[in-house]
Length: 436
Ligand code: C2O
Ligand code: CU
Ligand code: CU
Image (cartoon, rainbow, N blue to C red; front, side):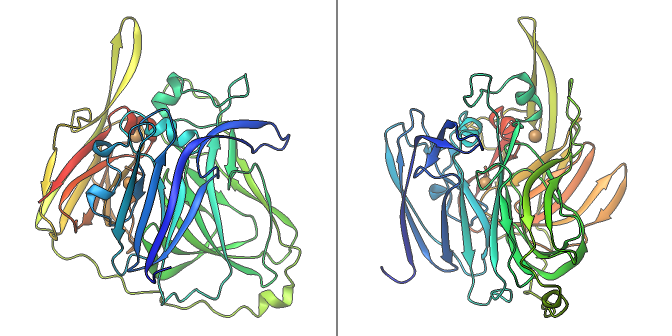
């Protein structure tokens, strides 16, 4: 193999796999028959060449969520690969983009279904200067599965379309409540993907200590220690250092329900055990002797003064057609239109984006092609500066909130921005920015 060149083929096709404990198989759609899709692991500066084979009966694309790839290689809805078709995606990754990414389909009108049927895979970009390299690493991909009475993956119902789909089975690495054996050294580095269509996560692991070290776009400047809970919006990724509880034993990683303003009749929600961690191999004396984590992880430069401003308003509208209620999810009062460009941005120019949530529920904002820095949040006139300087491509916006972020686009072409509750994105809560 050529140094610096990563090549692979990803084939999207139906496959029957058993993920529930009772061994009954379920018909999924998957990349290379694997759930989640194969891990693509490359170095900063590498060139990536992926042959995509679409063996589905629908058009599809592969979108490289969070990565700075040129728009024509980013699996935009405009560039759908027809059923039975193929194409090659090729891009060179810049330096300083090490982080935790993922890939998933993005064909307009089919994204939500293709993802909930299983099409999503992992993408990690590494750097030579990773200060946490020596810590054993583990990958946790959270997704969910909604089966109908017939045991097959169910289509979305009205409630899913409104609030986003949340399946009755919460999976980690496509398994239901797996048991992990924690490293005997007492410390692990976890990369966690929230690959759910809509479910937010609020993770806790009683007795264990969490140190947040990374967000979507890679390591933080400094670790954030002493966390007992980790919140993740749909599509978000984090990196955490986990230290074993002093008492050892088997402990459940639990996600608590997150209040996100769901509409209609919502059944009561309960904590869900995602997996169990077996700490019994960890010796207490190892725990006491753990070396200190580095105090600084990398340098993050705050983006400079903004030269332009964009305002994105998320809203919803109830509509009645033929006696049936349905919900419209809008960006600046409009539904997504592939023919319409909503904004123009200049390449390499710092912009301030203001995301205004005028709806009754939370919406996680995402933009393609770049990472952003969250500056502040405003709720009822109260401005709260963002405490963390971090690179992200996901940020939650609460009902009534204004979130301000700074970003720069480094390629010319068309980029999407949208709510990452995939049912909302599918329903048109998405816009396009032309970078010139
Ligand atoms: Cu996860 Cu438009 O993307
Ligand atoms: Cu994306
Ligand atoms: Cu939304």
